[in-house]
Amino acid sequence: MSDWNEKIIVEFRANGGQVGGQFAGAPLLLLHTVGAKSGQPRVNPVMYQKVDGGYAVFASKGGAPTNPDWYHNLLAHPQVQAEIGTGKVELVARVAAGDERERIWSAQKAAYPGFADYERNTSRQIPVVVLEPAP
Image 1 (tube, helix red, strand yellow):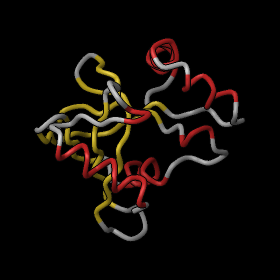
Image 2 (cartoon, rainbow, N blue to C red):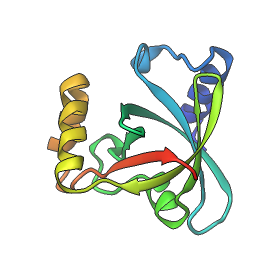
Image 3 (cartoon, rainbow, N blue to C red):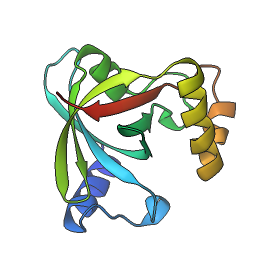
């Protein structure tokens, strides 16, 4: 895990899910996945949007040409956990498509214009992932 992520994770846990810096005031969760190849547990801080029945997260990777590792992890192992505030929830990940993806993605870009910048910086379609409560 990068030092940058580790610092955010430590700050998140020390402050009940709140962090400063570029994520100050933004909805942030800690996404727990299982490595697609390694099978090892992974934790990544990601911004989220509340949606009907769960949360949406965005595989933007800052507009890089490839998807983030956590996206590949949840495709391989869709059973995930998320730390939100001081709680932890069990979730199942699925990739949004069509109108659902467009609605969620448009709302995210409107609320956080940096996501529109990420979209302009890459030729790939940035995946929108919906995290829903595990049965």
